[in-house]
Structures are given as C-alpha cells and as structure tokens.
Length: 211
Image (tube, rainbow, N blue to C red):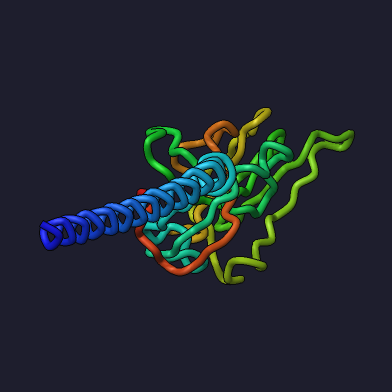
C-alpha cells in the first residue's frame, strides 16, 4: 500500500512538472508571437505609408533612357517632392503613359508650363514667356547629362499650357515621348527619380517604354 502510494505520488509529481514545463513553453511561444506581431505592425505602420505615399521602387525595362539608365536598373522614386514644388527642367521622372495610364514610363522633363518647345534640325529650342520684344528663345544645353554629339530627331513644335510638360527620353533616336504623343499633364507624373541602385526585381514595378 505504501509502495503504491509512493508510486502514485511520483507519477503525480511528474505530471505536474510536465504541465508546468508545457505551460512555460506555451507562455514563451505566446510571448514570441506577440513580439513578432508588434514588429509586423510597426513595420506596416512605417513602411506601408512610405511605400505608398513617399518612395516607390521601379525596375527599368527598355533602352529609351540610355546612356543614363539601363534595363535592370532599380529606381527609387520620390512621390512627395512635387506636392510642395513644381517639377523642374532636367529632372528625370516616372510617369503614367498618357495613352494607357496602366503603363509607367521614365522620361526627362524638357519643357515647362507656359513655354513653347520646338524640335528641329537635331536641336531642342525652348521659347519662354512672352516679353515686350517677343519671346526669349534658347537652344537647350543638355551637356550635363547627354553627349555633346547627341542629336534630337524630329520636327515638332508644341505650346505648353498650365500644368503641361514636354518630356523626352535620353536615347533620342529610340524613345517614345512628347515628340510622338504630345504633352504630359502634371497629374500623370508619379514622381521624380531620387536614386538609381542595383537591380532587384522583387517588389518592383516594370517600366516598359515603347521604342
């Protein structure tokens, strides 16, 4: 009888120890899940707004922006700056293709609202606001980002109204841009290219400029 009682007590003690051990494991697991949940929530609160409203990644496909941007280049696009200021000449932007807003193009701003842009004899001429003695005309100097020998094919003249822009691809002979489909309205601008980094296809949208 005493032996049976001792054995029963031993087993009962083992059971209690096992239960306490399992409870400890469950508490640890629950704590781990809670900590992971906190990290995920914080990441969503911080990253998602940044991803949606501030910076957005894009992957370049096509050669319309060579020699400055190539297929596979990974771009970080700033979507916030243009909420506080207007786009400037020379800036590279990602835009919604005016003829199909589901597509994204990458181009360079050449003409600003109120100006007239003329492409002729391989040059880009920009006429500014009207003045007393006519309009101030300049041959655009793009030597900062393009080879001096580069010619701009085409014969087009476009007057830009308020919130309208004239954009070109850097690879002037192989770019679908304002020479072909006309003005770009400001509300079609996604943002300016803030940074170009190594190719990383995950989480990136494709830009497929039509040649």
